[in-house]
Length: 172
Image 1 (cartoon, rainbow, N blue to C red):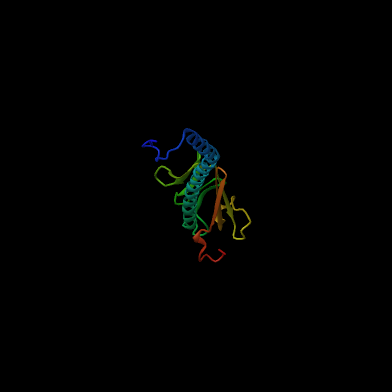
Image 2: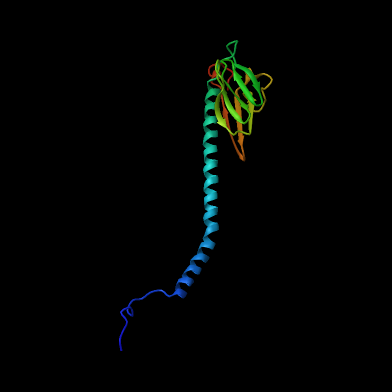
């Protein structure tokens, strides 16, 4: 009896290959939604993180501007030229305003500078030294300014105290 020279070689049969393909297909069908969901979650998280960083930078810059607000015209109080619920301009010409979804830094003598893009709303509240009374009608008496930004479902806020009250006696 004569042996074939290929008798000792082991290989997959067509049936075994088909079974392997079917098993791999089932595994792929199960894992594909998981991978898609993970990819979408990563993209969403990355976008929220970028938006959060931009808003945090803008709020930090706004808080710094509020702390550096100039003194009022009669050498008392805060030098606020224009105060509304969604913009503020100080006596030195600096300020912030929301224009077409862009939070802009008002720069005296120049065009406004973009501070943060994609802002849905800007809310500014002015408080007296008791922390509750609104001073929107008399902005030079403002001891505390609260700024709230909203972008999509993300809302961030900051409260800052103008430094002009340091040493003026009634600035608690």
